[in-house]
Length: 257
Ligand code: DAK
Image (cartoon, protein in one colour):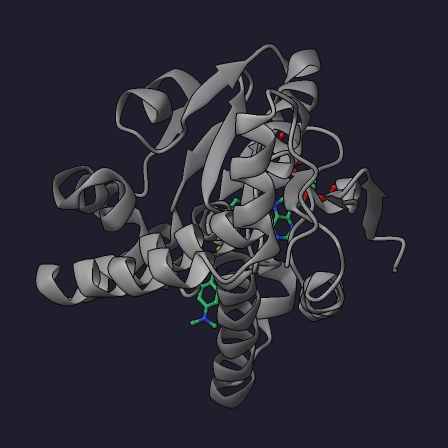
């Protein structure tokens, strides 16, 4: 783990904290590589939920503009590919990922939050995709994930204007699920992560995949995938334990297999 990315794993919940406050946690290549490696390492571990957050007054204030300013076309493409890979890791992780947006989540920072399964925000959060003001465009999936999250109308307005919105507005349009006092944000994220972690991991994992892949499929195909996934869970110890525990009126002890 690098100094600029802190990691804590407690009781099956990973908290990844971007820790480059002097640059408002702007993402450079080294930081993206550290996040990529950390997320890769969590796969296959017993982690059941992960929280992404930042140190100081920013979640992530975007891709590192100072680093990007000098990039060639080839460098920029490689940077975009790396950012996309990290976003995909958050989105396709075998456990739910939650962005705890503690402050600025701009540009690439907003895009990383959008790649998480859902977003909680502090009352101090500011979110937006201001790239067009820099003469570029959201390069880590923002043009695709923002409309899927908030609808095309809000996405077009935010991306074309580059406007930065506060937490209340972000909640109103469905970009963030809930808003908390700054001191309460991480506790709230952990509490939800604990709720998730207590559920059947095989079921949560299968559900995450259906939710991710379904919108790309025809409804009949997506429903057929749900039927297959539902049946498959009956081959897991989690399903037997979950139902047995209910019938025995006790809490289940899931093993994720
Ligand atoms: N990059 C680098 N440094 C940054 C930064 C960033 N995104 N954001 C802030 N910083 C640095 C500031 O330069 C300053 O450094 P020093 O001057 O102290 O050395 C320090 O963080 C503190 O920032 P401020 O002094 O500006 O703090 P304020 O509270 O006054 O203002 C702010 C906070 C968030 C409003 C302001 O810092 C700001 O506007 N930052 C830029 C936000 C932004 O535009 N973010 C989007 C970045 S563009 C692509 C790949 C990726 C992307 C696009 C294309 N391809 C390759 C296709 C993604 C692009 C982006 O994310």
